[in-house]
Image (cartoon, rainbow, N blue to C red; front, side, top):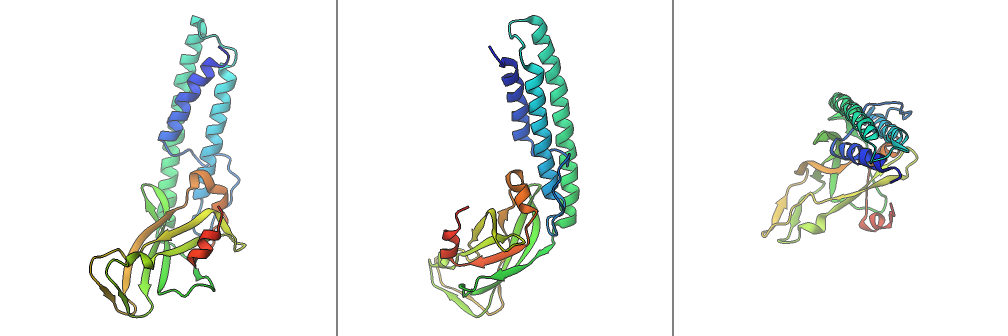
Length: 232
């Protein structure tokens, strides 16, 4: 059965990759981001290292016969080496990410508002940490005194996009938040009152979009129509 051992090894290796969340910075060529630091490079390096591991698994197991005892011995030995390397990569990644998160957590991010938007709020945005991953954390404050009728909280949903350095929306870079929760009774807020603090609005999805996040430059709040028009 062609590549039988490759599929066996790859299943174990890929399983380890999915369960863990990383590798070292490896040979990533991504530059440092002003707000996310070296985190995009760390995640990109993880992907590169594990791609190399999968390629090595394919080369090492090509042509081996699953019915040959000597080949079985070879692939089991290779298993041990491969899994030890995966564990080394995982451990190094976790150490590096923890260190980098400590440097960027709490860093304030520029905020802007679409010309089409008439916001009832002002917002601040910072980089924070959640489950060992970077998140965008938002705090919302009322601009003026505000009364929210009972069961109408969702009318105050807000929409935003992650900006690149060229002003374009980053890949998979739109999000929404509900800073005022739905209540069964009327709610009143004074002008300048914080209605939601430290709202974890969006993860940066560095596993899949590390290269895009290198250009991250800020957050723009937009209308629902503008949000719906973004196709990524």
